[in-house]
Image 1 (cartoon, one colour):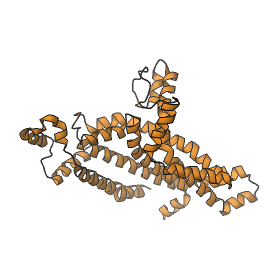
Image 2 (cartoon, rainbow, N blue to C red):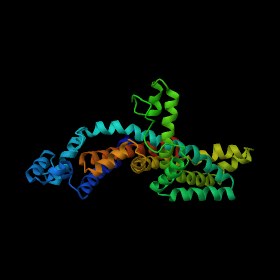
Image 3 (cartoon, rainbow, N blue to C red):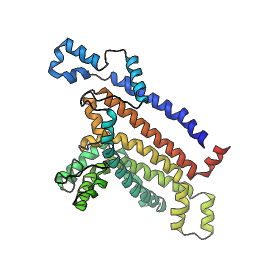
Image 4 (spheres, one colour):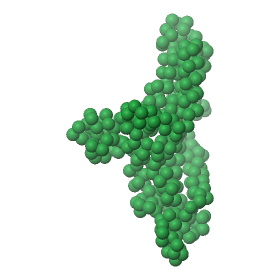
Amino acid sequence: MAAWFFRKIYSTFLPTLLGASLLSFFLLRMVPGDPVLNLLGERGGNPEMVEAMRARLGLDKPLLEQYGIFMSQAIRGDLGQSVISKEPVLVEFAARMPATLELAIVALFWTIMIGIPLGILAAHFRGWVDVGVVGISLIGSSLPIFWWALVLILYVSVGWNLLPVSGRIAVQYDVPLWSGFLLIDVWRTEEPWPAFISALRHLMLPSLVLGTVNLALLLRMVRSGILEAMDEDFVRLARAKGAGRFRVLWVHALRSAWVPVVTVLGLMVGSLLTGAVITETIFSWPGVGKWIVKSLEARDYPVIQGAILLFAAMMLMVNLLVDVIYLWVDPRMRKGLSS
C-alpha cells in the first residue's frame, strides 16, 4: 500500500503539479496587459518609475529566471505576495478558501441528496418517469452557469423576492469568523438561529447554480450504474432468494454502482472549484473564485499563479483520495494491487 501511494505521488501528483505551474506561469504572461502599468495608473507615463517598479517586482528578469524563482519559493511554501494588497498569497488564500469550500460543500450536498434518489427512481420506473428525469438532467447539464444564475436571480430574487442575491449573510448579523464557515461560526453569536437561517438563505441560490451541472451528471451515472448492475448474477441471486425490489435497488445494485459514482464525485470537486469562479463573481461571494477574477483584472501575477497551483494541488489530492476509496469499495482492485 505504501509503495503504491508513493508511486502515485511521483508518477502522477508531482508531474501534474509541475505542468500546472508551467502552464499557469507562461500562459499568464501571454495575457494582454501590464501589472506595472495597472499598479501605477496615471503615473505609468514616467519611464523611470515604470522600470524601477518592474525591477522591484522582479519582472525585469528573463521568464525562465522568473519561473525558477517562483518555483524555488513555492517549494519552501512561499507563493509570494500580492502586488495590489502586499499580503502573502497563502494568507489571502487561506482567508477566502473557507467561503469557497462552504459553497462547494453545500452544492455537493444538494447534488448527492437529489441526484442519487432521482437516479434510482429513473432506473426503477422505466417509462415516462425515466424519460422525464433523464430529459431534465440533459437540460440541466446543457445550461451555462452564468445564464442559469441570471435566470434564478431575475425570478427568485428580483421577481418573487424569495432569496437574497449577494453576500454571505444579512448585514445586521455580526459574526466573528472562527473557522471561516459561516454555518458553523453563527452558533457562537447571541442569535444563532436567525443568523443560521440568513446564512443558509444566502447559500441557496449560488449552491443551486453551482451544483446543477453536477446533479445532472450524477443522476445519469447512478441510473446507468444501477441498470448495469441489475443484469449481474449477484442481483439475480438476490431476487431468487426472495429479496424485495427495494432491497435489490438500494442495497445490492447501488453498492455495485458505487465505483463509477465515486469517480464522478471525485471529478465533481474539480468542477465545483472551477465553477465557483463564475458563480462567486455573479453572486458577489467573497471566496477564492471572485478573488482570482479581481486579480486577473489587475494582472496580479503572484495571486493568479499561486491560486492556480493551490487549486491544482487540491484537485490532485482529491483524485488521490478517490483512488484510495476505490481500494476500499472494489475488492478486485486490492487483489490487483497485492499481485
